Structures are given as structure tokens and as C-alpha cells.
Length: 221
Image (cartoon, rainbow, N blue to C red; front, side, top):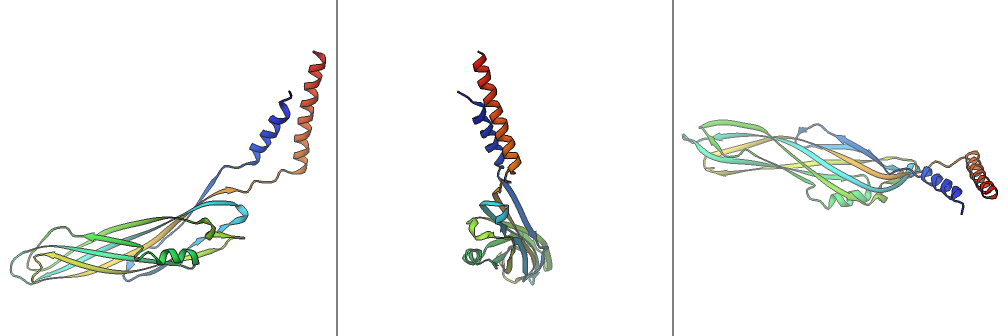
């Protein structure tokens, strides 16, 4: 049984297939004084380059909180203050916008001063950093585009503060900054380049030569 031609055909099939690829896209906005309205653009998947298998979107945010206390008492007070910066996101891509709008909020960035002993008068603490991220495994079909293109992702925020402990006669003000960004990873199979006609004929010729050589050896034997 001749095994040369099947082996050559198998080699041709393996050569025409390309390994799965990953493309990572991202944007990041610097923190700004809250309330923020920030945006970034990400590319859609151009269907001419391959077959999209999966899409993972990671939304991330960072916040910085500064607490200003006024202890109007003549003695010290023990308190703990906390902040929560809530990030809300949306998108120009319809299917993604529906998913993001269902998350309320998308991220909650919380920060705490920890236990404090406040002297009489004014005390400032911070900035205290807080970060968060959310990974979403999404339907890849919503990112497909013939010829490419892009979409926009927006983020806005609200923030709040709380004070616990010996709070009588103690007030606190919060100033904060926040920023958001996103990373989108596409996993796809690239479109294999078509083998040219001369290359196909050459492969067939090599296979036939192998068959003839094998038969000659059998006749001589």
C-alpha cells in the first residue's frame, strides 16, 4: 500500500491551517475630578481576517478619595470614614449597551480611612486609592464587522461618603477623582491563505513521482 501521497496531502492540510490568534485592544483615561464623563473607542472585528471564536471585555476603574474632617468638639473623637465611587457604563454598540445598562453600577470603588482619632479642628486624610474591574465573556457575534470599524464605551460616576464612630460634632467632606478604561480581547482563527495553482500542481507532481518510484522498486524486487 502506497503511503507517500496520503502523507503529502496530510502535510498540505497541516500547512494550510493556522493556529488560533489573540488580539488585545484597550484604552485608559486618566483620573479627573468627579463627576466624570469619559469615553474610549475600541475596534470591531474585521471578518476578512478570520473567524472570531470569543470576545472578552474587561472594564476597569480607579478612584482617589480625600476626606476633610472638622471636629468641633474640644476633645478627640474616634471615627472611620468611607467613600464609594460608583461607575456606570454604556456603549454605542446596541447589544453591549443593553448588557452594560443592566449593571447598576458597573463598578463600585470603595475606600476607607480606617479608624482615626481626630483632634479638635480640621484634619485631612488622603488621597486613598480604590480600584476595581469586571470581566465579561460576551457573544462574539455582536462585534463582527465586514471591513472593520469601531464602537464607543462611556463611563460616568456618582460618589458618596459615610462616617461612623463618635460622630457627634464631627463633619466630613469628600473630594474625589476617578478614571475608567477597558480591554477587549478577541480570540480568532485566521483566514488561511489559498495555495496558488502552480504550488498545487507542484505538490501533485511530487506525489505522482513518489508513486512511480515506489512502483519501480516493487517491479525490481
